[in-house]
Image (tube, rainbow, N blue to C red; front, side, top):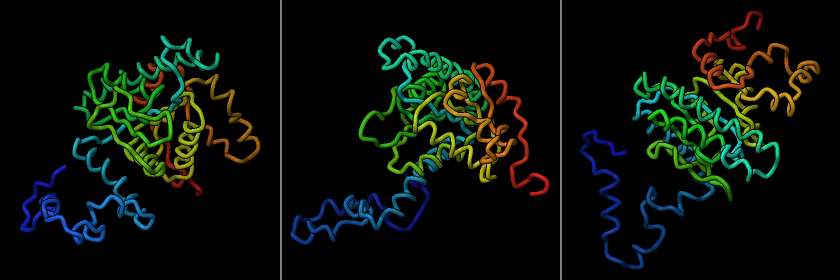
Length: 280
């Protein structure tokens, strides 16, 4: 991204190039002499964490703004769920059975991307974590429709690398989980959650909490695979215990097919946020 605005001052690129062409002396080799914004060791110091947080927030935001992307459809889901053709290699029988949701995620993303292309790719853009499994299926479905999709990767010791279907110019990499989560939800027109593990559950409950507390507007919040979700979480028990309200069970919907999910998103009529409810 280059700033083409006219300015009477020398730009940062010019000075960085000039600094690299100076004579090699003990003074110019010293870390203190490096331009601060070109000094990786300096930028990685603990004291610079606030700056790095700001940079991780700004870089994707500026690129998405420049691309004119106004809203997204977020897909959360397990990295370990295989494509059906590879389900024999799944480590458990359950993972093999859940492979059907790879195809569901792919078809759902294809349908939503076709809708996105009616807005010239500004609305309903598929956004995933950019990795394998359900995330790959989401980006792949967008490519099937001939559209662009976003991948929000994060640096992990293992497992996480961009899948080949993310639009390269919209493939981002993060150090901070918190900033990555912000970018998932900042433009979210819908949140769609497929079966997954700790990461998926973390993203699910943080997103639900934001909606429950009125910190985020109501959007379609769809849990794909009723049988899976009702087996691993006793939602009714939370309400019966009083740790959530009965009305909180209406913050999400169970779906099993791509077509059902698309219909809900297209016909969504948001209820008031919690702060807007009478008597609150």
